[in-house]
Image (cartoon, rainbow, N blue to C red):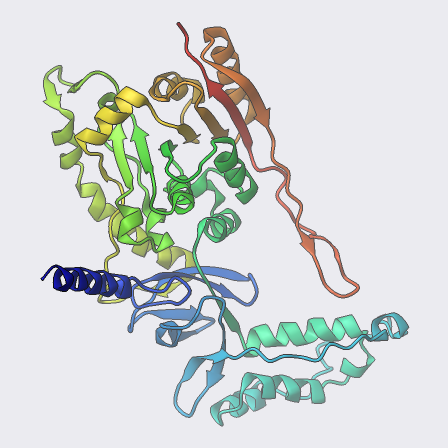
Length: 444
């Protein structure tokens, strides 16, 4: 009888494991990051049977992307009646060492850009498309009918092919949304939404705060949930991420939904106001009456509805993804912390702190949240500008609340690595903000 019960428990556990999706493959309802034409456009979308992506003036169904492994490359192909996205399988190419680039003596000095070098007309190209010609075939036809292609320098020929490929055979790279890719996408398109937090500054925050497994991390996240999601991703379902705030309305953490976290990880993302985490158990309302903090947070549950709408609206703005009629809802992160957890944190304190509040004064927040940490706990505070952090650092020294204080400016340089064309990128961000780090000590 006992053996039968054990077998039944094991079978139930196996069924639960099978229900968890493979993180290496997409599934219906998951969020993905679509890289169109090698970084020209970065698109956030939720995969479903009716979701579409607009490239140029044409809408393409995202259904072929469901079930494909992350990192797959898709290309636009034209069928008899409709264009669609088709996966490109990787092909091994034989490595060959060639000195053509060095020995090539051609240059572009004799070329004249007068729009008369191409013999194919737009009407002929459209005819080829209607007849079902693939993008690669159109590119080959353009090269064959170009008067100047053979006279161009080899690197110019590659640029010409890449330009035509983006126009007639656009490619879509299926990327997995995680802390780095989400941060890079927002920093490139809408940096103000994440407080101009660059990916190297985000990694510095996680390192300075010593975010490791089974840590209880206190987070002040006012950058859309990017820091909350990055901490939860590193914890991997262990410990807790507690997003704290002033007042009764918690900040939005919409970006957490893009990480495709499992229910195990979602359960570890909680929120609680600074008043709840302090010794006071009641909060004074603006009218002067006493109200229960739990009731106030429950009354702000309308924020959950706003989160669903904002994710869909954000997808429309960022990537032109048409909203679908049936959206599969992801588990919601940021539930109210349990009383047992709050009491434990009041007694023992949090193991580390990360603050990223672009519109708030760092010192006004730090003096309220630092006492919630355990002694010798590290903390890291991000801000776009230096002066607010310098003021906060001075006040922490005066109040003798922390040691090992330092302000770090992260520095990042990206390189283009290509044959005979390896050099730093022509356009890079000048700076990625500043990080104030230190260790909390006892003031007694």
